[in-house]
Image 1 (cartoon, rainbow, N blue to C red):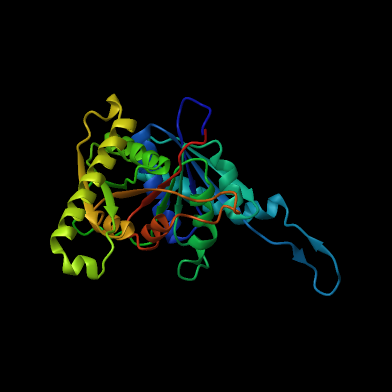
Image 2: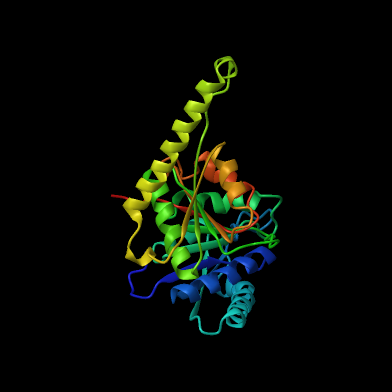
Length: 299
């Protein structure tokens, strides 16, 4: 996290249309936070070999600068067009994009990336960069899809709540975002009751079990709010949505018209940082608007 008093929003750009959308979202978020915007372009050029001679060289900083300079200049101009009050700093790094972003994230409060990049096929860019960031970043990561469905969209912030430490971190982030945007939080808690002959033969038994599960889900949300809500969130309206459904499906349904979805990550950073929880993966895969993935702070 940023060591300065002013927050830092870090956004990765590669010149693609999707990274432009991520940049726009990051500028507006920086404005809401009163933060500095840091625009990072990572020039990832593998070792260049001289054909059939055996020699190899790394492109010089000057060569990389000639390629990246116009991208960073265009990004700064675009940011100024979106909101000229946001201070912008541009940075050029070389190497694997995910590793460079993770390193820069150490001095940021939020990381923003697009879910597609130049040369990507389907979700390959997200698979190679976004997943690593969402699983390993020390700060929250917002992934912006290539096409944002704006039909009947509200300012709601939808968050998955399950009582875990990552779920609590996601709820806290959602409340903070809603307080800044003066919007509502929709807290989703889902469960799954088993289906089988027992339920079909005893409908009343199923009804009682469903009632108990719904009550437990409501208690889970209320307990989480009690743990993370502060006086800064007093003006935030929270609506609880509890349902018997797969969690990822319930979150996506609740977020159909939302501005932002927030999920906790169960990523296991010790396993090369490549594993996210199934819920966060599913929500990200089907997203039609920005999704934030949040980790609990390490003790």
